[in-house]
Amino acid sequence: MKAITYTTFGGPEVLNLTEVEEPHAGPGQVRLKVVAAAVNPLDHKIRNGWMPPEMTPPFPVVPGLEAAGVVDEVGEGVTGVSVGDEVLGWASGAYAEHAVATDFAPKPAGLDWDVAAALPVAVETSVRVLDLLKVEAGDTVLLHGASGVVGAVAVQLAVARGATVIGTASPRNHDYVRSLGATPVAHGDGLADRVRAAAPNGVDAVFDVAGAGDLPLSIELRGGTDRIITIADPAAAGLGVTFSGGGGPFGARLAEYARQAADGELTVRIAKSLPLADAAEGQDLVATGHADGKVVLRP
Ligand SMILES: NC(=O)c1ccc[n+]([C@@H]2O[C@H](COP(=O)([O-])OP(=O)(O)OC[C@H]3O[C@@H](n4cnc5c(N)ncnc54)[C@H](OP(=O)(O)O)[C@@H]3O)[C@@H](O)[C@H]2O)c1
Image (cartoon, rainbow, N blue to C red):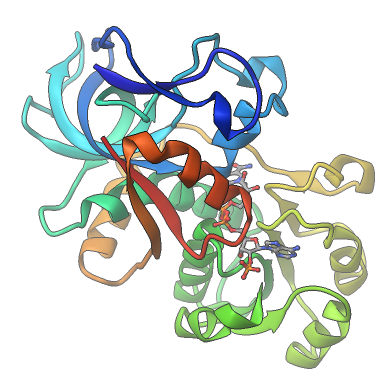
């Protein structure tokens, strides 16, 4: 089958469209005929060699961790899913014609394939962090990176809980952030004052999706490190802030969010849908930090 692979760490030039052995569904797994594979920032972080060895698969690496596709093999012990079913979920080596998945949910018939591929990581991360922050009705939440893929989903889920959300984004994205139900503020110099103006009674919780160095001002705004979580700032430990990474199985809960997306209650922007061969272009766009939506690869 065709897959994007790399055999050394480096820039986007290490990515190649190659012919590799097909994976097969082992016990507890299904194999997908991938229809859409999403590009995550983690993919280029691993490719650059920035992640610890335990988070880096062995060479040759087939990147990608989430996809939507059609089940074409069902492994031993897997029940409730059949060959031909359309699913979305976590699929290792998703930048390929076939990938195996252990944690997945049915794809509603009306859900766009690109949006389906974009949901698992963004939804699981958002729910995990909003739960850890104990966000509930009446809270005012400061969300750094509200215009990004994870941030936009987190805004919608926080607003659905009854929270007021102040969301940071570049000015070109302010109408978008507003459309999600948050009050947009520009990131960059003077952010703390803009947040104080938007939330004169203070913020009850901070969700840092952007990881762009705004933890110190978040601590200042909160008056401490309580109810601040980052998913992207490596400075967290040194500042006494919680870093949340990786979650447990989520497929059973993902089904409900997939339904909401199919019904238009939960939206994800798609920045670009590219052929698999253009994976380097896709990762480059995501690495800018300003893709304005999910980049998706179509094998
Ligand atoms: N730990 C975990 O479990 C986990 C899970 C998923 C993702 N992540 C990480 O979360 C981060 C975001 O992922 P994503 O998929 O949402 O990325 P994304 O779609 O590229 O979003 C990036 C966001 O960061 C904002 N941003 C960019 N530069 C900024 C700056 N200098 N100051 C403030 N905000 C800035 C962007 O806003 P504008 O474009 O409007 O400027 C946008 O809202 C990545 O680092 C990813 O690796 C971690």
